[in-house]
Image 1 (cartoon, rainbow, N blue to C red):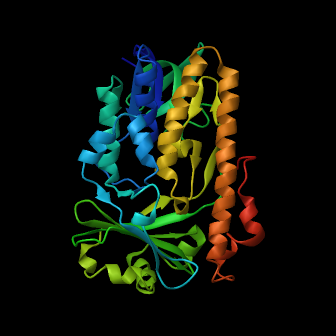
Image 2: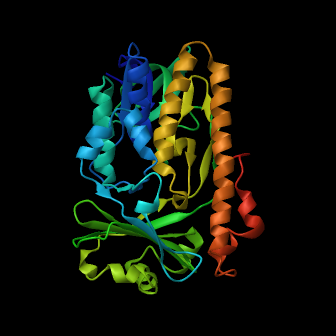
Length: 377
């Protein structure tokens, strides 16, 4: 049977992406609109490593709201002891979690964390379909018909688009993507060795480095820089990455055995926004809506919160309040982005110890004002 003749299954809400934002949307929908059928389409199977390893304490209330806090606490993720940063000064300055009003955050095995949330959504009544990528979407009456990579079709009254840093559906949904900053993350995982439960950040001329110890006696060490700098220093190559790593002051002390290192994994990490934030019977969430610089530490909290808000927006759309829902959702996103852009510029300016280094030139002074909602490119 050809793909065009395969009967479409149906869902009131289709959620594209089974990460934290998608699962938060599914959990919210099942709790507040249990009569609606929900299907979650996740392209992967939760076995590959995923970026975003630190969950701030601010997320506790969101996990509680979603009904997953007991399962999360039972999962045994690493409790973060402190953040130590060599940022404005070459020496590490430590901020211990005991002095935080919200308490400690956590260092995650992201694949296991994402699976925990997705399983909770499935237990709440959402249909979770792993290994199922959505190839495109076409208008179908008042809703959408999703075309899956395996040739199947799904008819949905509304769509929550939460596919992370994948904007493959932009053309289908008549949306545009704006890349504000092309930051790239070049990281590798290290096996073995007890960690000290700290997040460590070190500013360098080429950008900044980040490390956190993870569950299972693992550690991630990552260099955040511009693609042009990565090319100039050959950071995608093993020799180039080690050369830059060994020039650090603090990161280098974290590794005693190079043989414990995994391969270099390269990921986009810059600021990206979607225009519009919501459209005809669809709403975006998580990184798809607004992907932030990891320095802001807002990625996972934003994913959970925006997933909840996207669920409410989708419910409003189905209740006949589509224009109002789109306007309100866009205002919330734009307000959050404005505060983020200002805070990020201020934070980079503090560390401008290398004013003539290309990475820092792009993020200080007049260049910092480039982050604003506007036209796509």
